[in-house]
Length: 508
Ligand code: NG6
Ligand code: CA
Image (cartoon, rainbow, N blue to C red; front, top):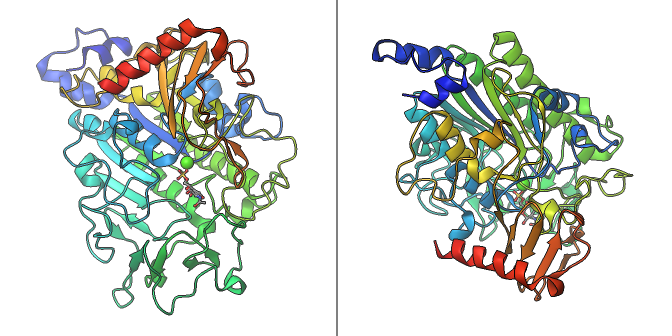
């Protein structure tokens, strides 16, 4: 096994004899934790330079590791972004990877190989905790919310799972523990629909007087089932005892993540910890309320930072910090008003969730997909800042390489090994990356080409410049990282080259 791993750990390869390799693997293999935030932008963590927010725990991780300034999610919304990260397959190659409903079938098929499968075949214990949003069950609408939900995460590489099926604003608003709804009273079965309301169940749009916690923003939707005084997307009936409490979501999932680490302290593990912060509805625990001075969104950022702190503390206490590789990143860029009147817009002040970039969540402009990205692995990685161009799609192949594991033909087809860039051994990353938000873009560390598309240029509801145009766009990111000046007409050659790359990739 694992020549690369041993040499990376400075152990050389002489230790690898059949007699001790398994023992060596179990004692020396690093643990892996992915902390995947939701809708947290490049400017939302203080280590990325904004002076308006203070996230000390994330900053601690940054100071122990590498902070990447040119790292990218594959897509500007959750489902396609997460799909690509977990499978190493571009979501845009499939037409069923858009923002999933809460009753979507499992988008990653059991026959696909995930990064969790990869770790599992290396002898790791694997866990997924938090937001899922990649569908469950065989087909849409067929899940048995009152029984064993199958196929589920155990079919795609996770030994353990404790998840929210979709998003905080989509039903069913319950946790699913190893494929069963938590705290379900069999006498009050759950029903879920995204097609029609259940007779007798009040809806947000008809009963604003029942909305006690947050009101939906005008025209966004989020006006269907009412759960905990908040109306959501989708219809739901029953399962009253099983409903999560919005203000406790961070506590619940952080607690599960911490327990998973504790339970596996003596055995190598991979933990995928996907927080609900800072997605809507933003209902941080009362101990964070008012603490950021920026309203619910800022408070949710502090709650996220707290979750990160709990993970760090747990690793420190268990003596696991040195040999645990943590990736901290976000699924897509930031949005301020994403559907609820939580005063995030009014209280934003000088804070720039998108940092120096244009656009935001949903946008093909940089802020849609250029996300915070930290890697910490004290045993191996020297701290610093890297400007290497990296993509979340490459974590699969790169960490497989770290494990000395060959990728089977057909698995993770779009994922490439950039381990040296991820470990800070080189500042050279990808030659180009491809991103998706309606249309596709291809960028090098200098040029960005946005393919023409028919989508709207602007989303008024979320106040996002989406970046769509019927004309080709080209930006010089070195001179103009804010994508202010479309220089397409001056650089025919660059456009041709980037277009050709995109066409070639699309044909694969
Ligand atoms: C959008 C929702 C938004 C959010 C998003 C998914 C409306 C108008 N907006 O459709 O509130 O739920 O989907 O966010 O319905 S994501 O981060 O999970 O991709
Ligand atoms: Ca998201």
